[in-house]
Length: 138
Image (tube, rainbow, N blue to C red; front, side):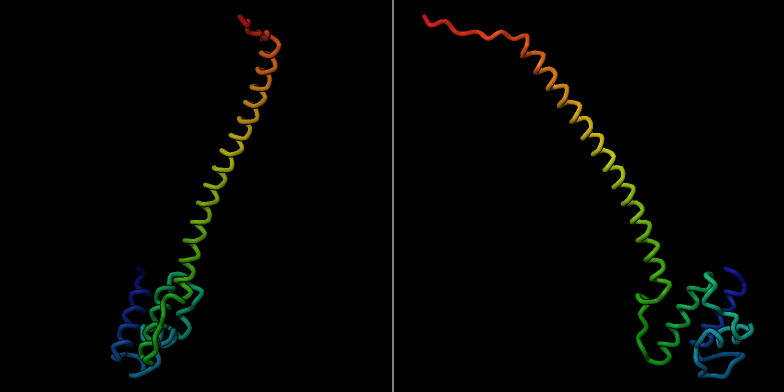
């Protein structure tokens, strides 16, 4: 974890504990107040930075708790992205299995067709060689 990320997490913890050093007490907990509390400029915490994804989620959760609201991580973008990645990986694996099974089915269909032709050929060949016998009635 980078030093800046550690500072941002410590700043968030101070804001949660309502013991900030650089911003007024009882400040809203948002990206800018966390950045200011960490000694950075306003706007330093941006959603576009993937390394801050977990911090952004924690900031939203902390503000929801401060306001007495319930925050659900189930709906957060980070959780949704992770779930999407898992589902894409699962889809890829299932597609590979499907392609393999389809290949095996095609191979079996071809083999079945070949064996039917061979069987038909052998039946025709044997029918020409077999002489019919009539049983004697004694």
